[in-house]
Each structure stands twice: as structure tokens, then as C-alpha cells.
Length: 466
Image (cartoon, rainbow, N blue to C red; front, side):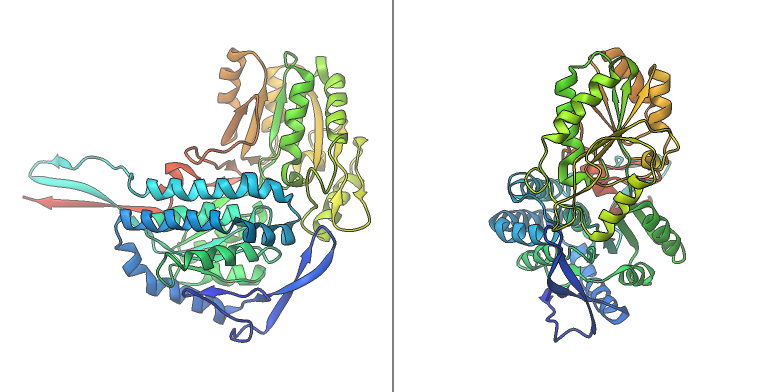
């Protein structure tokens, strides 16, 4: 049984007031292996109250004190990487070596970045901007932050949220996805060794739990990573109490491939970026737009690279039966040409064959919707203008990439792509120092970077007459 972590303590299932539980399913097998508490209003209120009680003291700590605590947390995460990987593999089906070699080290680096960033918040210089008066600005913690994370990167998305929030002096109540709660609880248990009680709390549950947390009157800000639908609901609910919102929502990344690329190398790189984490990534290189001169050759290269990917070895399963059914439904309703894949893989678990489809129109559901699966769509374009029109012709605006040797084209098209991230001749890489966030239906606010830290602060002007 996985239960809440509140006020520095793991709440046992028998000690929780929650009467409901939900099953935990191993997506690689489809079998239930445990259960998690489903919290309701009383449990949410207890977690929020613990965060509110801890806020005054934590917000008054110095940046160096917060840095010291976060650096210790990063060390603890690395020291307990095997246990965290166990939890994530069981609940997500991720490839274990990817977790240990890539994701967990990145999480530790991101915590360390925000530990240092806490001491580097800049602002305008104090000065006499009005005669006889001295003005200066303060950057302050916002308060209690309600945070909701998705199931595709349970640990990493928790880190992206708690690290800047805590570094800025806020306290947190985090609700992880109901299917992947364990790594967030493990992270909170490690944090309890270095943070005061109540600074970081985890409350488990379903959509109603999240709704209760968002609507609670105490949190001053809500930060969500999730679907556009969830973002709209959170923004609407938060507006009732004028809460600040930070929304990192769905993506549907276009990948613009021009006729001067090394076809085989570009196809290999794009397939890797499309199928990483089984394509369950809001920046996945899923929507490939190819110059007509190399379209057929590039489709063949994508099919070759995709067909070499083995589900269960190179990437894991989809999160749930519902997600697998959704993707199969998208494929069944499309008139696209399926070049490879398109079907469930194996008889156990929620695996999808590596899939490449073409022959789609811009209004096709597979183009307009984010598949969140190891699935690549291919469309053809004739020139730069058509490429931009197809790329920008979706509601989402999170990430994109351009594949070409023409640096002039790169300079021109990066300005025209309506996406918060543009990669060139690569796709999907992140750096702790660089912002991650989108436009349009992909939400607003930035994760990572100094922008991510600033989003969890408020600015106060102080003016002194003399």
C-alpha cells in the first residue's frame, strides 16, 4: 500500500482517514501489484495545513540554507537511485538502464541547479527613481504551492516542480498521478531527512483529489503538468480564488526535415526522439514534416529505424489499457497508410508496435491530437512556407525541431515556428540552465532555468522617503 507523506511522516494506510484505495498496475504485465490511498477533502486539508504551518519559518530561511538542504537532497537521490528505479520501473515499465543512466542523474543535476539558483536571483538596482525617495525590489516566496504531476515522468516532473518552489522559499503539496505515486512518496521521504516537517508533502488520489487541492483556499499558486484539458480545468478552478497558475500542458512537436539532410542519420535521430519513453513525452518527435523531394526515401528510412526498435527492450509499455485503447482508436479512425506497426505488441502488458504512418491531411485526428505513443506521422511539404504552415497548424506550441544544413534557413525558420522550444539537427535534449515551456494550448510558465525559479516568486516594490 502506498500512502500519503504529510508533515515529515509517511501516513500508514491504517492511520489514514482515507477509506478508498485504487489499484497499482504494472503496465509491462497488466497485473495488479499493490494499491494506493485515494485522498479526499480531509486528507488534502491536512497536507495543506502542514504546508501552511511550515511556510513562515521556511520562507525566512536564507538562500544558502535552502541551497544546503537541496544539495543534500540531490546526494540522497543519487544514493537511493536503485530504490527509486525499482518504484518507477514497476509503475511505468520504463527501461531500467535509462532511468539509472539518464533520468535519475538528470533529476539530481536539476535539484543542484536550483540549489545554486536560489542564491542568484537578480533584480533592478536600488536607487532614487523619484527625488527624495529610495526604491528597491524584493523577490519573495509566493506561499503554499499546489502541484500536480503526470504519469509519464513521475520522478522528473516532481523534481521540476518541487526544486524551484522549495529553492524560492515556498512550501509544497504535491499530488502525483494516481497510477504512478511511489517515486514521489520516496522523494518526500528522502527530503524529510533534510527539510523541516511540512515543507514538502505528498497527497495521493484521483482527479477529484486534484480538484480538491486546486480549489482549497490556502494555496497561493497551482502548478500542473498534464493534458490541455486538465490545464483548462485547473485554470478555471484557480480563477475562482485568483490563484496564480503555472501550466505545462500537451505537446505535438513538428519535426521539419529538409532535402539537404543525411537521410539515414536524421531518421535514426528522429526515431530515437520519437520513441523515447514509448513516445509518452510532451516533446516527442512525433509529427514529421518532410520535403517532397526526399519524402519517400525518408519514410523508408524511418520505417527501417522504427522496425529495429523492440518493445520491452528499447522502450517500455504505454501507461495503461485506457491509453493503449485510445491510441489504437486514433489509428483505427484514420485513413493514413500504415508502413509499420499499428497494432498491440504481445499478449501481456500495454505495448504498441513501433508505428510509422503517412498520407495524412492536416485536419486528421492523428495530426491534431497528441498520440503519446511510439507513433510517427509523416506529411510532405513543398517549400519553407508550407512547412511552417503545417508545423504551426495545430493548437499546441511546446516543442519543435529543424533538420537541415542551411544555417540561413535555420535563422529564418526559428523565428517563424510558434513553439517554446526549437531544436536544430537534434530533438528532445534538455539542460537545467535552459527554459522548458510552450505557447498556446501547451500552456504558460517555464520549467527549469532561472525563469523556472522566478515563476515561483513574487516581486515587491519598497519605496522609502528621506
